[in-house]
Image (cartoon, rainbow, N blue to C red; front, side, top):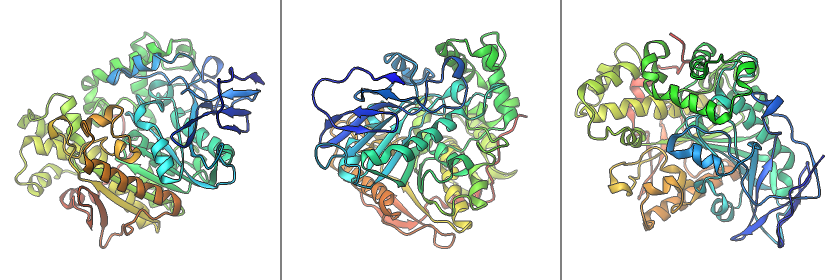
Length: 515
């Protein structure tokens, strides 16, 4: 047993979790508990180990501040942001519960929505303002949970002597904490929905394929699922390059004493020059994707999500999946290429990312009016997010499961309106945090009334799905292929990206190999 942190001053909602008593805060009619450990700190003897259950504490533990983020890559200054909250208790959860009275009601039995943030498996922390669950919980009548999981080499590096997919194992441990504790916060452990975006949606897809995660959730939402899954050989080769930046080998013995910040910097260094390994690492090198879940024998992730769903692994789980129309455009802008893509760059993208031997020709035939910018954007949007997401729904329904599909087509008005319905635009709309965090910049100042109305519709769909499995439009099938379009004027229509769907219809999204 450990002593609880010093108790916060002033009253606050109090609950008793399995490990001990917690005191949180009241914010806008919601009981909020932050920084609750769900596993022991993965440092020292536990560095690179699977998460271990947290020990208990005496007294009442303050749960008012987010826990320290896991070590981060340097993208968007996330490494510096992580260092603002020192400590090694990286694995913590946060809970927002609609407050019926003086505190969270253990008997409420509310639906539970567990968020998994994205960040290319390299960055990500639950304490970002865009992930505040207050509005979603209060207006949706759900318990919202967010949490930290290990990223980069700490979470996804293929390290000799360590289990693979430690970041995914952290996610399983967080869901086990939800199963064992959420009733105390007014949630129903039998009504858990996982939802995530980008690498978070890729994680949701991975959880669908993980035997270890079976029974921990009954519904899943994948928003722009990242479609990269590595072979052990590819992941090990990338880890070797990262360790070599420090003059070390990718082993627990060599890396366990390395400062986590140095390890993250080594991952960044390799990510910044992945192009030189393009012949060896293939498609991930062209997108500077240094980390992804590893498909490996055992119960962690034995097959890809598409294979698992095709085999019926998700037949008992209701699925909501979709993407934005213009996924790649923001990423192209961040690369400084928006409106600047050359014909040679477009041809390279077609050669690298198209499916099949005649994929490039099929893109040109399917999009005859598309110039270099459009072709560059289309094929990369399809490769990394759009088609992986659609194929999750197709695999699910082909195996007799249920899936609902959407596409966000509302163009972001922020940043001069040049980004369209880009990657990440769904995050502020789903959480209702339209004026805070980095994604809010996509919406612009205001926010405009149409953004508020669209956010309300998306939040209602997500919380309705979490409550009863029905987001408000028909399930997807291979005949009609009906999807919900989210725009200023929403509509249900046949899946609109027909040319891309046909180009990719026979692609199986295999494990990415070491060449």
